[in-house]
Length: 482
Image 1: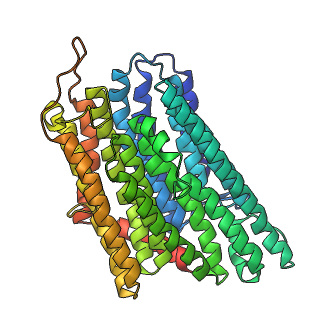
Image 2: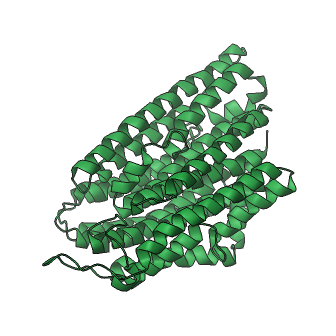
Image 3: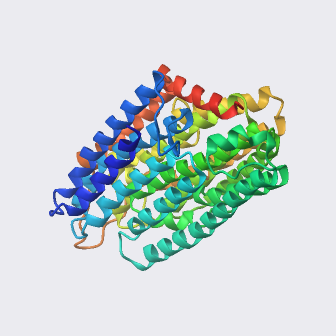
């Protein structure tokens, strides 16, 4: 079963590359997305009933943390796959073989990241997600998308190189302590109390910076505005909710080793500082932002900061951060996909050209507005629940300054992001250029976003018990030393 988690999307990638028709190929995405979701749910059910899924001499293992994030990413991929046929039908001028095949390839590599219990194997899988997703950024084939692709590759490569160096430092921490060198996570966690603290600290910092670059934490976030700004909505969603979740998982693996070594406070201080910095950077650059998709990129920087801030606070905030991973990813799907619809309807993503979206594309405009309210933590949407959990934990545990800064930055984000979003959806739409086609909302490109928003609303009103169990078990796994 654990091999099937990786093999199925890779098989679908091969089948998609070989499929002869551009017109029918996009329909393989929802078929494969549903199949992958079924495989993942089957594996999760087995592990929740006591089965242990391992492979490659324990290099692969589906534990509580990987199970939660793999389940979420599989749901996100399926939701995006429902949107793909309608989107690609509108882009019939572009061949889609590479685009569709690479989506499955990215999903397979993300699955490998989730089940990797070997530091080197996880590093290879993370680098693979960068290479596989890069070509999708260039789907529009213009100068700006080419620049964004190169920036994504270059900055991501620097980050992944630092992560490799951190992996070497972590292995040397065992050698320095007179232990056998290993890159297996279970062995590192088991021997963590005996690891050399200076080398462990150095390795953690390098790994945090390296994978933090992939995650898009400030100040390592500089690839995000260009990449998200030029990527198709599906790719932006998978980057913001999928690839960044993989990088977050890699950081959590390192944090788990620090917890086992008794060095949790060292890691938490870095998390809290970086989390607040990322929120501040995102807030500042969202004020008076004139590019819709770059606005969403800085929103992602902010929410990556919220994730590491929650882990840094520990306790109940850890539960809140893991829940926020899911809530943020689903809400980003609403925003990126609806922003893509608005972009195509106006032929621009600049606020100087886009206004009156509620009149030109009523469904997409309303979804974009609802997505804004959700992502800024407004009730009754799901991000409110997870952000309130983090804030409550901060206040309850006496972190009053951190809690106050958290609230302040959320307020700045609401005002800054709101000014741009309201300008886009309100007012009268400009007249289209003579002879230019005017695209309207359709069921194919609207229904999947409605489904995403329905999930965001549902998780704001009621968190299903199975999900609560998954999040609690992941949080307990992360905070427990062997």
